[in-house]
Length: 133
Image 1 (cartoon, one colour):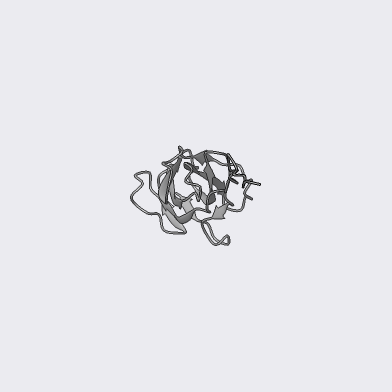
Image 2 (tube, rainbow, N blue to C red; image 1 turned 90 degrees about the horizontal axis):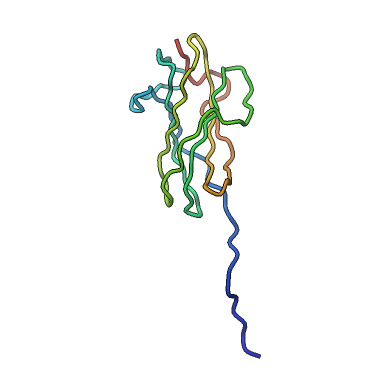
């Protein structure tokens, strides 16, 4: 009885890793807003490192809510799909934030197959992540 070899393999899709190295920046994407910090700009750039174990392209999704409002799990904005492979920094800009408002935010990674990481909150949950003056 000769050994049979499979003509194919089935690969189980793996979701992306949870985003790491979260940061909040002014609209220029270079100037960091310290945790609990204040900005006069109504557009904020959010960055995080995303990785997919399968090497799929990955996008970053961010949900921004006024501080005190519960997260809904529905993204406010998403980046474009990034290059496939190892770790990469993704950026999402959110415009139209209200003056005089405190905010908190969370991110997740989504790969090209639609697999999602868990949401990762930026701050400690007890204080605002940033304030738009």
